[in-house]
Image (cartoon, rainbow, N blue to C red; front, side):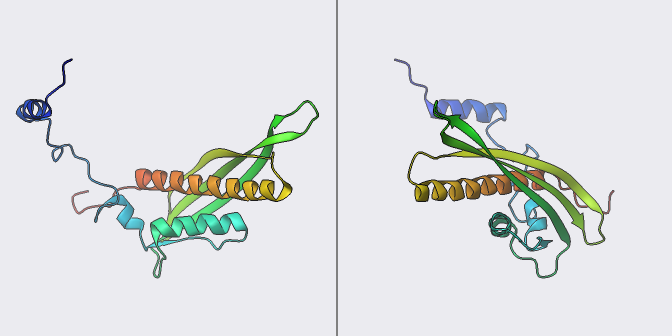
Length: 169
């Protein structure tokens, strides 16, 4: 059996100039000076008015921090829907699907829209247990889809945030 020798492979890559990633032009998103650091502690989030919007704002504050003097404002519209996924011959639902849609718009301090879009995702839960277990599963599924949407939103925001204008541009 042939096993590749990593040292020889690394020597070959180094000789070709492919082992180093410093010249690739990419930088970490969450590094100091990276796109995400422009938003951290500087983005105002809307006031939550439902349990799910509270969970969304809490998840986003974990990634963006709380803004004391915001340079950006994030407008959010969260929509969750539920549908029957698995139905028995007796017309009893054994599984539900929770779908979520989050519309967003990021504005600067002057109100100019920097980016706008939507993210969607879904999850499911089982309804085969007791009433209490089903309600707990439903609540957990709704919380899960909100966290998924907040992660997708953060990915979009750091990818779509326009670069900082420099003196050269």
